[in-house]
Image 1 (tube, rainbow, N blue to C red):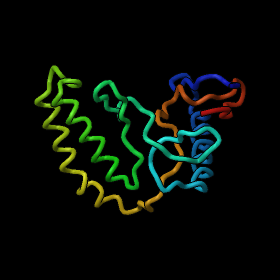
Image 2 (cartoon, rainbow, N blue to C red):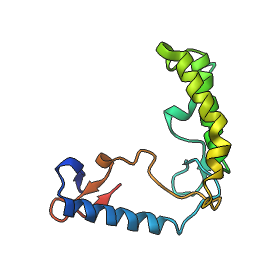
Image 3 (cartoon, one colour):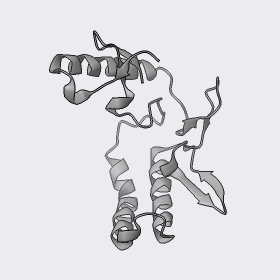
Length: 151
């Protein structure tokens, strides 16, 4: 794919604004293609949404991979992600050095989901295509004009 990874710290203010403007335009265009489910596109050439293709949202039970999703609501996504983390903490598979603190934090977050969602009034119940790991080095730009060539 053409372009180089964006190096934000080495980019001038003018070029940063250009990149941000282009990103806004890209995401505005993607809003024209909403989905009824939240998950990962999982079939080449199709708009089928399946479970999340992300390790942090995957459980392993009896040597079997069990990804979570897809979901019909943001609330279900948040709740199931937090429940998975709580299960992993209880099994000693994450936050092992500070299991009690981690459990309490994630339990608080789980209990807070309804309150958090009550402030999320602009939710239209649809989901929009985005990169799961949308950080600067996953944005490709051309050398000369900082036009985005890939995400």
